[in-house]
Structures are given as structure tokens and as C-alpha cells.
Image (cartoon, rainbow, N blue to C red; front, top):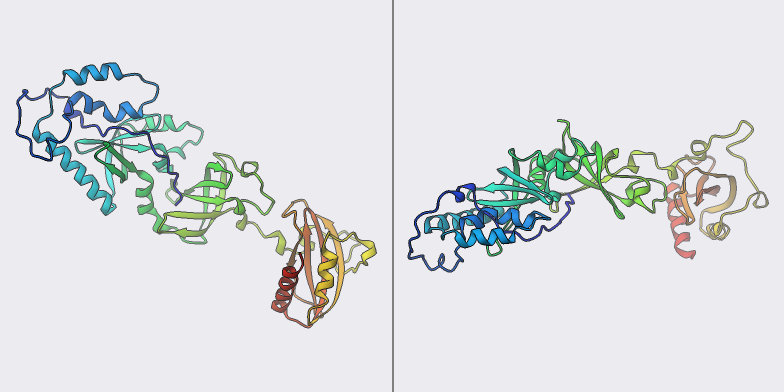
Length: 379
């Protein structure tokens, strides 16, 4: 899964609400070497650590400093507990353990969760899509407020004891739970999340009705039309249907496609692209004087006549399509079976489509190779 990697602002990993209780008498303890190298953290300071740095728009520096100055030092037993919990966080990260943690509060950047005596942060981009997809029109900040007082399943994403940084990810926990249910070729209903110039992220709806995982629809898989701006086709909150085209288990990524659920217009016949008029014949041969050949097509046809096994090139119908597939000239072998050794090519550029009939003793695979050789020679 391609999960967004938005790094939150540095913050202190604060301690549990128990740190707010009346402190022990101020008595000097002979701290061990490892403990007495730590700065003495006050109960008031640690209780506000995570929320103070993550919360935006609040100026609490003066009151924070005053409370910190008045509070007595933390005793050795509690420091030992903090150290043990940092060690546990590192071990849980290495093991990839799924944890169920209570949500203490929310701010504009994400959730504050309780991990033993410590507090950690779950940035909004690392939350599961299951929350936002319940009502895609709601701002994510409103969604996270509803999670306060509940518990969520997470994995440890980052542990930095020196900077007091403890980050969790709900997306990775969801991947561990649900990725085994996804197979290439599966079709899902989805909701479009973030849209970028390179594609759109789509949240996948599982059989339980919830959206547990997210995949990427690359710009090349949005439509058979020419896509220059993804936002011309997709916007946040759109309901779409997608097919899974690739799964990268090592990187936890899912590649999706919208266009592969539609029939490829380049493999359709002109009978399907644009229906024949009542007086038209599908086998009508047109002379070069009757049609204005697509730029470069005449030279390609002359080169095709130089290939062994191709004896004649003729032109059929020329029409305009509703969609633009490519501005460049493209040649596609029609899926119409050869009749009397006559194969049909579709030459396309912009909205123009030209039928080209090749008479050849080659089979369909031989025609493909001949066309590929010619296209490799023609600039």
C-alpha cells in the first residue's frame, strides 16, 4: 500500500495521567548511571509534552514553564518505568506487533494515544481510511474528535527516546489484518481520497461494508481517454469501481485500475466504435484520393509493403471518435479475425480513426511483428 508519509512536528512523548498525582516528597536518590544522565522531567511538563507540540495555534509557553519550575523531580521508580516502556516500544516495532491503544485526545494533526506510561502520536495520514469513509464530506479533524475515548489498533512506526518521539500507524495494522484478503483481479467499490498529478488514492470497500485499505490508481490507469490532469476525471469523495492489478507485499502497496474495467477502444472494431450507417458497407475499400490519410500513415504503409509476406495495403473507412486516446499516430491490430488473408489495422491519432487492410500470407503473430519492425524504423 502506498501510504502517505507525512512527518509530524517533533513532540515530547508525555506520560500517563497518573503523572498528575501528588508527587513524592523531594528526596535525593542515588540514580544509576543510565538514569542520572537524563534531565529531570516534572510531572506537569511530561503530562503536556505530546499535546503541546502537536497542538497548533496555542501559546502555552509561559504557563508551561511556570508549572515545570514549580514541580518536584520524578522519582527513580517512575524513571525506570519510562525506560522500560521505551524499550517495550522498540521491541514492539521490531516484532511488528499490533497494539490496541486508547485515544486520549485529538488535535489538528492527529491522535494522542496512551502506551503504558507514555503517550504517542498517530498522524492523520497514518490513520485507517475506515474512519473518514463513513462520511467523506466531514473534515478529518471532526472525524478524529469522535475517536477520543475509543481504542484503535496500531503498530509502532517510529521510536526515538532521545527526542521523546513515539509515532504509531493504524494503516500498517490494517494492512496486516486485511491484505491477505485481496487478490489480483478482484473488483472493489471505492471512494477517492487524495488526488495528485500522478494519480489518485482510492479506499477499498470490503465485504463488511468498511474501507480498510487504500490503493493507487496511476494516471495511466484512470481512463482510456487522454488524461492530462487527473482532477479532470476524479475528485476527492467520488465513488468509483476499481480492479486490483498489482500487489506489492514488501512495500504494502496496491495498484488499481479504473480503465481496465472498460473495454479497450483500441481493440474494438469500427462497427462497435461507431455504428455503420444503413448505406455503408464494412468492407468498403477507399482510394487514397477519397481520404485524407493521417500524417505519417502513407510512409508506414509503404514500409509495410517491403515486409516479406505482405502483398497489398488498402484503406477502409475513416471516422471521428468521441474520445481522444493519443495525439500521436498509433497502429493497432484489430481483433477481427482475418478473412481471405486480409487483416485489419486501426490507425489512430487524436479523434481520427482509419481502417487499413493488409493482405498477407502471415498469421496474426507475424503481422504484429511486421508492424513492430516498421514502427521501429519509421521516425
